Length: 331
Image 1 (cartoon, rainbow, N blue to C red):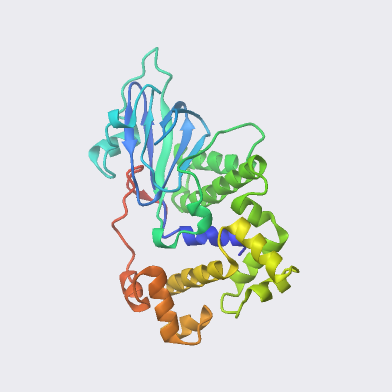
Image 2 (cartoon, rainbow, N blue to C red):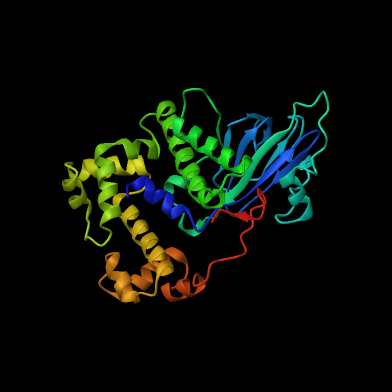
């Protein structure tokens, strides 16, 4: 796996939940805040996004909206609304939400209406305690409009989602988990590409594109147990200790050793959730020869001891219900 794939792996804590809705006439709802990362895909028609700050944004067929921090927001037929004026979205699984899934609760279209809008709305489950620095740096709202010739992979994912959802094809239930995973990858990739054009040389976009910094990140991600030092990483990527430390910190926002420690604790958390390996074995996999030292570092990073962390994550959490979507789970 490359570093970007690792970033996405640290983000996910379970399958996305979603609902497909149809709206027409005069309508509007408020969504969030959510513990997950919300998303909306406009499958057909158009509507307005009422963001937590700033002017309303027109959404058209093929547009994708991603809310990585679960920010409160609204969707409406008109831009002349405020978040406070919009009623909350119906609870997932409620009769009102089930009616919206089939379109029976939508107001009938009139000659002055822009027409029916069809959307896929939902959220990805996240573990906020292990959010990667790249994801923490994302804006509250990412809007990726459907523009001819831009982000072909994202457009293909949206088209495939639309086809499987609206044509009720055989195998759609098996395809949806993979398509929603692809949607997340392609929308983040599209945002990276746009940021690289708008803000060249800044942040994680530049870090992943810089040969030396990207190589150092790969070394850290592939070999978290290695006894890395700033000097060793600098030598591995062909830079002096001072030049490497300055360059890495400027792009990543953390020193090499701070990022190494963070990645080790993140890796340890994922290992603790994955199986019942002894703590001593997990400690060695993330560069600690002492189980006591590992436990102390883990508690400092996660606020609880490794054993307690493992017990709390022994069973899949079932309480996550994104208000931005309904009760269907992809997978």
